[in-house]
Image 1 (cartoon, rainbow, N blue to C red):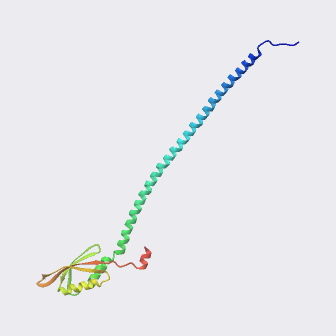
Image 2 (cartoon, rainbow, N blue to C red):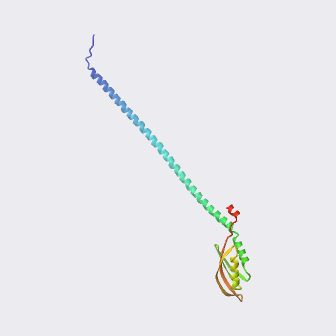
Length: 190
């Protein structure tokens, strides 16, 4: 015998498909929420990691800024020490200059000429004193001009004066002090 189902089978199929559809929509919504939550969690963790990296870089930059300031301070100290060293080397090189100056003045001083004042300003030397005559002052100027350490003597003033009941010429002149040129061995040492 043949059985005929008089129940509406199409409605049953529609109802089953509708339930499947709702179940699938629910699963998709749940899946979407889970994916959204996972993406949100991942992005939040990446932002926190990047913020941690940024904070680390900022702290390292601050440490480097302190080191740069320390390096600048040390460079300034080095420059100051080098300047002091150069001054000391200059003094060391020219320390015998005063001795040479007085020795050269004594060697070049003709008889009958006397010094009362020797004043040095840089490389310029002012000489003042008495001479028995103007000719002796001229001899002194020629001697100073021929000196290897003294150059360019210039007579500033000469006038007649009385010194100890004697008539003398009072003079004042300037002369330049030339430092000796360093020898080849001294230049190589610098």
